[in-house]
Structure formats: structure tokens, C-alpha cells
Length: 425
Image (cartoon, rainbow, N blue to C red; front, side, top):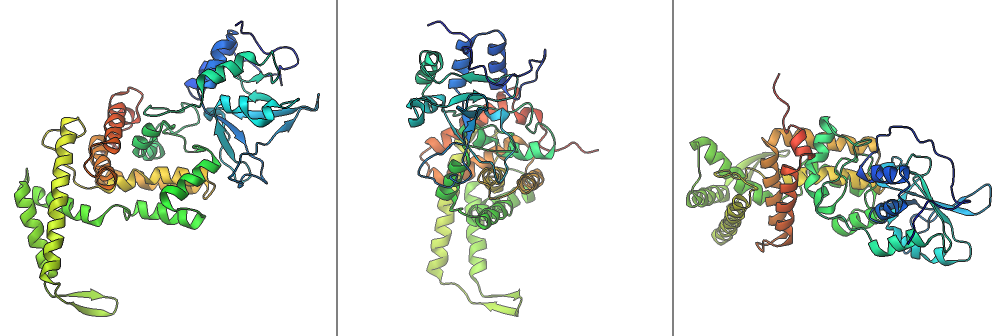
């Protein structure tokens, strides 16, 4: 197959070609370089391997049964144009402009692509890496074949970042880096504050399915709960905080048996009759039944067993340093809070300012609770596994190990370029 530039009549709007251009990410750089040297095979192969975002018709954006792209009209020919954007070229989220993504193969096989006069695809219009894909045979053979070979892009377990238009330093970047374990796991750009994610419809569906968020108020409540660390289990935090207190008071390793004894002592003491000060004054709390207390103690003892086994495995897999232990699972909420902020922005439940404020708050809270990215990562992984994994050491655990090693070893990782705590003056 001979590849070449789009034929005459499909060149689209003229784009300036500056001698030097800083691309937002490796994707746009690869497109630009391929276009500059006339290597359309490479251009199409790159294009077919990434997400391409289309703007949705405003009146059909909330029709979730299908996707209705917003087509543009070519003033010269009257033909239809469909503008497609790679992630680095997307405009910031705005209430009246909503986008959804698909792979190039989807655009090549969509129902409207097979009609007599299909729309012309314009890639990143008005930019140095712009190109126009001819819609009709035989001129479309090169890009449609590249699309068929690539299928649907699936990014998993990789570090992706915007070098232009993304946060790289400062509190916002630090906050976004808290969510990088999940960003790497899902193959999303970790530092896109102006976030479109998987697209407007997909983000709304994700929030509904995983979080029960279907409105702005739901989203605001979830963000608040995560920043207040109200989504992680208070029982987990009780057990870990008690061990941390013992270690701090006695200066070192806490024997598991002694930890369990301390749990039993504290829970029995709490079950005794006592008085508490409430808004209504001093209230007497009645004693709890002995069998109920015994059942609670047994449950926390089982939890301690799970925690110690997870920690032993994390030390073996390099998530925890030798002799280290998890002091709190607040990271499980604080690491999800920046992602919840971005998801809500992509779903148009909140504004960019609101999302950025939440990311900054997560940054400050995490810096007060943990000493390093390593400590934060282990705490996040433990919370995730206690919630999902049930000691299977399966996908929920394995993903954290893989993402942790990428973030601690990749030279471009935010964990290697952003201090977890700012040095003291």
C-alpha cells in the first residue's frame, strides 16, 4: 500500500507550520513529526492507537442510548466536517460543549460513514498537527485500514501526562499526583486538571455505576466525604490508629498479639457505662451486652490478621519498606478525591474552579497525614484491598503493585519530580 497526503480537495483549512512547536504530549508530537516528513502511514498508525474526541450535539448530549456528533458545514462545498481532537488538543470543559471519545475504527465504521456523502474527518483543526481524512474510496483506504488493524484503543497500566496544558508542579500537580495510582491503572493522563476523561456520557455513567452520583448535589457530597475521609471504614482506622499510638508511645515494632490485646481492652472499656457531653447536655451511655462486645473484638482481630498479611505481602513486593507499616488508610479517600473532582468536571456537575479547589485541599490534607509517596501509596493500596480484594491478592492488589512500581521508577513520574512535602524554610 502506498501512503501519501490526503488528495486535492481534502486539504482542509490551512494551518501554519512553525519551525518549532512544543506538543502537549507524545501523541501530538508523533502526529506533527509524521505530518512534517510526509509519513502518512505513521500519522495514521498513531491516530488509530489513541482516543479521538468528538463534540456532541447540545440537544442530544444526554441521550445515552446513542452518540450524536456535532457536524460542521464546509462553506466551500456544503459538505459535512467532523472535528476530532486528541486529548492534548481538547478545549477546557464548558457547560455547552461536551465531548465523547472513540477509536478511529469507530469513525470508519459508523453508520453515517457508509452513506453516499459521508462527513470528512478533520483531526485537531487549526493546529500544527492538523490533517484531513478523505471519506471516500479509494482515498480513505490508508486510514481505514490503519483503523481496522488497531481496533479500539485500550490504555491500561501506563503513565501518561500532558507536558503543555497539564499541571506539572505546585499544589494542583501534587493533588493530581495523589490520584496517579488510579490514573496509571486506567491509562489516563494523570495531570489534566481540565479533564474530559472518557467523555461526558461515559463519565456520567461511571459516576452513576460506581458512586451513585447522578446530580451536582450528589457530586458535591461525595467530594466532601472523600476530603473528610468519611468513605473509608472507621473500623480500619480505629485498628491502625491504635497500633500507631502504641508504636509512637513505645518507640518501635508492635507485636500483633499485643495489638490485639490492646484492641480488646479499648473496646471493653468503651462498652462500660459512661457519660458523654452532647448538645442536650450530659448523657449516660448504657453498657453494651457482653456477647456483642465479644463479637466486635473478634471482628477487629480478624481485620488485624488481614492487615498484617497484606503488609507482609506489600513488603515482599516493594510497596512497603522493611519494618514499615501503614499508619492510616486516609489515603484511600484522599487519593480518590482528586479523581472524583475531575470526574465531576468531565460530567459537568461542577466547574473547573471547584474541581481545582478540591484537588488543592486533598494535597494539603495528604501532606499532613503522610511522610512520603511510598507511605501514601502503601496506605492507598491497603485501603483499596481491604475494600475490594478480600485477601485474594488478585486484580485489585496486582494493579496497585504494577502502578506503584511505574510511579516510583519511571523518570517522568510525578512521584519522582514533585516532593511529597515541601522542604522547611
